[in-house]
Image (cartoon, rainbow, N blue to C red):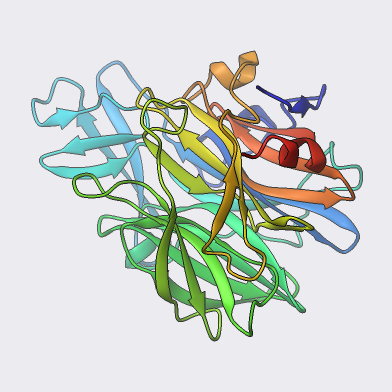
Length: 347
């Protein structure tokens, strides 16, 4: 049962609202913002995906070079070595490439609805060989005075978790790839438990095992171990094919509340919730049987990749949970929930 109260202003951001970062590309879609408060404002760290204009003859896609410049590759659509059945990924001569190149941009708002960019906060671009296909889907967690940005680093080597820390979002310390491929959906808890950092992450498996949510701990927030699989897919349900964590879990009187995404074999993405023990977060206490949010509005059903709602971030204000989410892999939207109502649906 969908219990989301969507913003009537949705979509809050769409590709036409932004200028491309470079000549020769256009903004194809906006996705899955990280969310945080800073300087008495609400901020979205939006994934901006760009690609060249397409033609009837060629498929064109961008790649970052080591020096930060961009190369545009073109492949004839009738090339027998081209496999382009997915809008997001192509395979050419046995190698995988993304159809878009993503970077991260900051948007702020005083009311949580109307967002705009501030030139004092420049975008975050991929750097180096491990980010040559871009950076994606950043989660933002605050511990003390520091903000931890965990994001998906993409290259021909695979998909892993990169991390940066900052106190002002203008100066960053890069910690490189903290979890190697194939891994993503990493979100840090916003407080220590028994003196240790904790984080969700999601290894990917195509043969043995599956796309499950794992928990890891760390003495310093950089070096991770004690990895435990805590939430698996469920055959025949809305989250039968893959699951992945949203943002940092929310402390409640009943335990840690985790909002997560799940997808079925038809690639339909919904949101659900799980409750973890407050002292032993590897222990799952309850889980929603049905989604708390599923794609149903036109902007969620139709877009770059339709039938998708996907979140990386939220704001908590008393019982009100405001989730900012990517819709149809193209738009940024918002919705409000009651924490009590979510907790009541856990079984």
